[in-house]
Length: 141
Image (cartoon, rainbow, N blue to C red; front, side, top):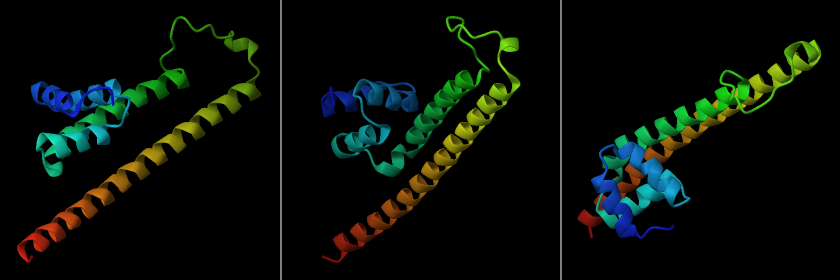
């Protein structure tokens, strides 16, 4: 990470939109949102469950960003700087193959995003269980 832990905590605290700030901090430090969340938990005194709303917002914003990229790749949004061959010069078989490939790629991306979301929910459940165990351990030692 390029920033110190204290600098990350201060910038997060000062941010008006916490979800966006998590993404910005992750981009600036070339790390994941989860790494930033870990810094905030370990060095900022935040509790993981209290950061879930900002974390969810950050992931939603990232998802919207990646959807725009996918839309761009599928041709829904065409950058003016990219020159495309004239549609009538592309054989129909090539067009069908390209469309099928894009659809397959998009389906695979969406399936993996769903799997990631499922795994994140499982992790959250495990973290809750670990917190209960730690609390019990503190009370009984």
